[in-house]
Image 1 (cartoon, rainbow, N blue to C red):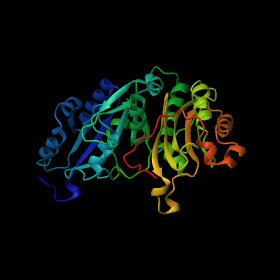
Image 2 (image 1 turned 90 degrees about the vertical axis):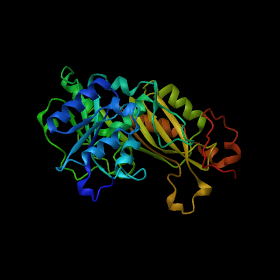
Image 3 (image 1 turned 180 degrees about the vertical axis):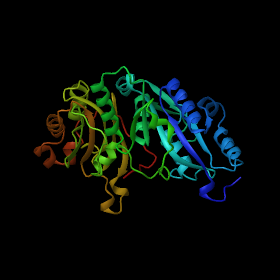
Image 4 (image 1 turned 60 degrees about the vertical axis):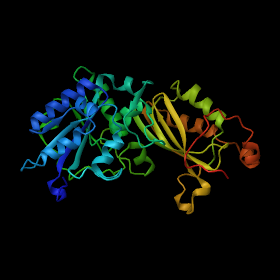
Length: 358
């Protein structure tokens, strides 16, 4: 059944979160207080057609209806948003995504951001082969849910020291500047439906993206939480970069880096722009664009390094200086690629379906 117009589409509120019990309880309470229909995570996990079936049934309701969908952790948030907005392909014709609410356990948030265990996502846009499973670090799933949320709901916050709670709220606001940060139990948090026309999958919501776009305005601030943009035209020396990450950043010499992301270049791979992804204890560099495939120079993502850092108690000047020291010296830069190819490169080899031989 196809809807005749967007105005008659069912409003969908996506409820995400890594803590199953808190997510389940919040979604149920939200549906009750808004008089909305609830679709629980266990039903979605056991029946891949559950959402489509619920939407078709709700079309029979003459009045405007809202569907609260509690998604299991194994749902990739980008796929959820894409399926309901069209940013990842054709959207569900019966649905209109109005909110994305990420439920976080305030009492365990920092620990969760530094977890190094993995989860298997049901779907992920990075797959290269049909049916291939995507193993993703749990901390990455949590951070990206926060980054894409329109509202971040803090649970179990009542026993946390007020200053620490203010710091956690500011950290969330830095990770997701466009999101509303709310606390479970506040009357306004559960009784009002969103007045926003709809959630757009085209929005650049993540804090690191806002930093690189020079449009970073977090709604909450705290003296211990900060963010900065690192720019440097020189490529990294891979050996010195690896030592910096392992021996100094990971040991929190410059404070606690919670999230860093952006674009980077290694001297040993000079014609490739890499995606820099760092969350908690996990960092990855993956090929993103190859110079010989770029026809318009203005499409170049980054000539050297362009990376956003978000963290707690950051010593910005020290970290920036250490990153500079990990790039090529004047002599190394002048020597050019013949010398660069001799550098030890401890980072994993890059394999990409888009890469072609020179």
